[in-house]
Picture 1: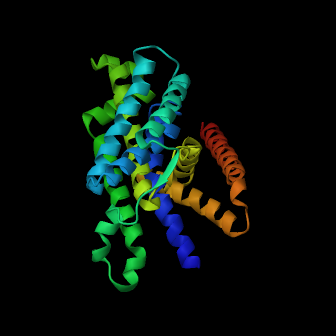
Picture 2 (picture 1 turned 90 degrees about the vertical axis):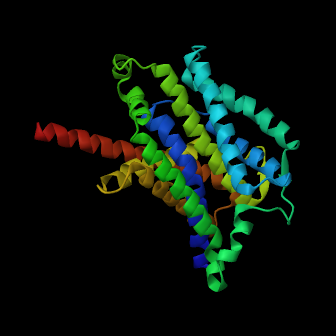
Picture 3 (picture 1 turned 135 degrees about the vertical axis):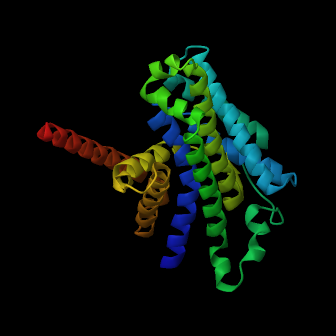
Length: 299
């Protein structure tokens, strides 16, 4: 029972960890409160669901879902950069539009994949024999999460990645380098929402289901994981922040799962998420104040 609980926590932690890396880009790097995440997560589910239902290769379906998320994120950026709409409102507009789009893609509010539908998990079952088959889904999920993590780490070391980090920290620096900060922001939002949609696509094949409201609270979940990752795991010098964010999501999922196992009603999950998020913010604020007071003492 305990082993099953731990496996479930790790599986969902790594799936949503991909999403959290996207939230890390928007909130930490770009300082952009992107609420469209609540729409791009189910967008990834919807796109992947329809493709698999039409017998498209499940690995290719992940790439298409990623691309769809990139397009959605680009629209959020265009609303902000080209149409001069406030960033918070841009995310709300995209999220609202995606609700109808996601419904239209699948054609109904909820649906399930057929038992004979081919997924990335059914395709890799032959690699695991005996007791190892119990960990087959987790192994596949970890591989995908690591590919996404290392790809993001690599991108952040490129010139484009440097410019992306500069937009959030020092936009004037980007201008002095003869680059358009608006274009860089659109690229950043595209990549972020692409990762969120990729997370949704993996979740689609994991749960074998689509629900138009499955993205509700996604941005809160991702932000909590980012704060946990930055606050707790950033102190480990050899650990990259993307790894910390994934671990932050695992910690977050562990807290929710343990609370449910302890007797919390499923309908109270949103309340638990809110309490956990507030606690995360309070702890983060405490460490920030402690850090600032330490700097004053050294001065």
